[in-house]
Image (cartoon, rainbow, N blue to C red; front, side, top):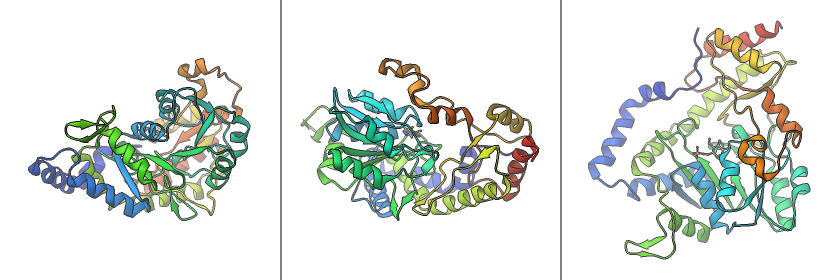
Length: 366
Ligand SMILES: Cc1ncc(COP(=O)(O)O)c(C=O)c1O
């Protein structure tokens, strides 16, 4: 049996008619930027997430950078973030001129609020929790720390589409949240895409200016910005896919529940669910003994798995100039040595998931 990890081509096959209709609608009108389709997508995201404002952008990375910029974070400032993330979290901080400062994670792979507190200095301006795999970080504790120290909080909600914390959507739990619509995300464009969520009208205004060269009118740039607009094709496809999101999350959660039932505890640790977080499972990561051999064993039996990621952010070459070294964040390092993403996406049948889960048990002989 084959259990594939990604589903981009299969997804297209399932949605072909609707996607082609989206493309046809946009191209027939000929408005490919800042069109009514983009407005309609942003309105649909606000309705779904409960955010006051959605500013669509070119990518999740741009959403982080534009968000930091609109918060006024710049040279010399420090932003505390998680070493367990995709490199864009730290990269965005560095690109606005600030310094990424890492803080240790907990068993759930999210930043540990107590570790944040220990990293605060007079230069700290903001905290950037990452909702890793779509599991929301401990936002009550993080917001309380931010309030006590007068810091801004920007959520890296790149993986958190469909995620909720105490009923509120990821990315709406702080001053702003950055979401990715990369093709591997749950709400997937067919190229790069992302957006910012915020309650703050002035923040949204600045982000809109910045994404469009700082132009208030065609011939008046009130500041120097960048080109980071989401195009109308992506917006129209994403609006269509948003209508299917809940069904997709349900199928992913069903697949994860099967894994939880079948995989024997011991050599494999699966972070438990908590009552305050609704987890959409953008990714399903387990922490496994002898991870690399398990990965190969599963590949040999047709089960595709992925290591997301084998290197914590502080051990990338780019982080060397921050003075980071192995041993700085032992929990994060151990997790990166053990982490494995199992295939759980919506296209998989129950039979495929049961097969994959049983292969994990077979590897350990349990
Ligand atoms: C946690 C995290 N932050 C930021 C990003 C960047 O998003 P994008 O790829 O849309 O630029 C990603 C995407 O993989 C991510 O997983």
